[in-house]
Length: 167
Image (cartoon, rainbow, N blue to C red):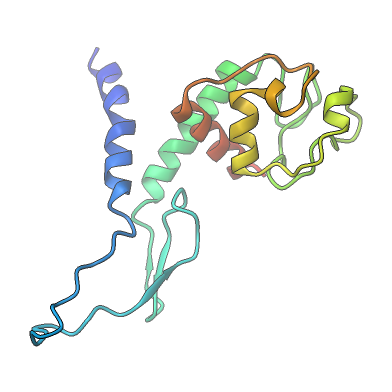
């Protein structure tokens, strides 16, 4: 029971922690002298799911890598449970293989016979297109053979993070 409760609380806690990432810092009022020098400018070079931050001084922060790793692990579990009956990372099955899916043009896995709906779909699989696809495949490609929908947004995000990690 305790393990199930921890799993239930883990995602909202992780999302809450990540919500503060990238929040703008308050600046002193224009008519008041600053008591401290302003913080050095910095740049996020990776998407929030990777949570890697590089400052102007070249300092690298990987504070979010634990959370990203947990999201990927959750995605792998959801993938095995929800997608594994039809898909595999490295073999075509009922559905096409998924290793390398992120960044690949839809309907282009060698050796897989796609429905006409997928053959005519002109898009590249990205986090955004995968999210829309997993939510409602037939809305994106009327007549697709894939009828499965992954309704839970957190599950979709986890599966997409997992697919990004193996692409």
